[in-house]
Length: 450
Image (cartoon, rainbow, N blue to C red; front, side, top):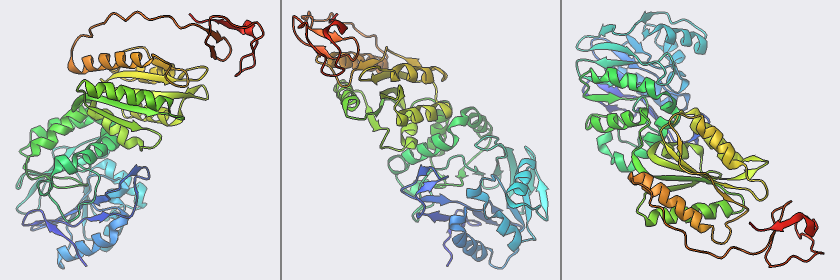
């Protein structure tokens, strides 16, 4: 049974929604499902705008045949060859051999790669070329690396519609709605739109900016993406979000704290830092990166102006979930953030140095302070270091100068520290026959606390 919705009088949404597969592209969790959009124009000539993923192919073909109503299919506009939009293109070519495939040269090569065949009829288009289907005229615009090299978009100058391929898409099934103005997008969809952009397209900010510049020269009244709702109102809202994301500009002046903790010491430090920041009125978000999928943390790394990475040392390196996150953030080309670090290590803290190396390789990243270093857990009085870090972060968020306070006079701790393992023996004197309870070294391997 068909399930369609009209976009305009002669343009019909004929896509489908997948709520059964837990992952998109075999990696990104989609707990709210995923929409795969395809559109059919019923003009003097009929036009199919892209196909769909195999997950929704049954619904798609029922929708296509119903919407055609016995008419032949004249054109298939192929904007993007990724299989979530083109896996069923080969089936369409078999079912409708009369259809002319409209694409650019790179798309044609990928049709051959994915479907091991040449279309019977092909109309190759380049930047600025047009096709008239009767009442409608379409102009084609190349959008390389948004987010594959072959991508193009098309613009209907009659109804002023941009068919935007993956641009302006979002995670999430449509659940009966079709238009962004049918939902509270800012409340219910924005986080998933950002997570989609940052994880799928985020690496290609300059290319997205190039497409936005081209789009600015068009009178666009509606955007039809290949995922998520159609935009027919308040287009400036989503275009502004894309402009910020593409320029790697934060949406929120606040602090994201991402931590990796094994036995709780690092997490406690992160919690204390978050409390101090919240007391100063700074927006804070926190993630345990060993529990939360990296796609969510990456999304908020784009959202927030400041980031704190807190990680234990593991096998003389960064704890694995934090290391994976940092490499993923670097891979997605995030830039222009202010960063602070917390490292932990019971005998040889090394995560701070290694995190610094990864972050320093990213453009425009500023590390505000030397890492706060824990030895297993916070030592007595070390909470003052976290409070000082909170003040530095808060001042940076607010664009203020840090006011240094004279430290209160404190008695120096008395005792002796093992030079081998770091165990501290608290006393004015150390017995000559003392044996370290941790590493079993003699008193000669101890030295007074500095």
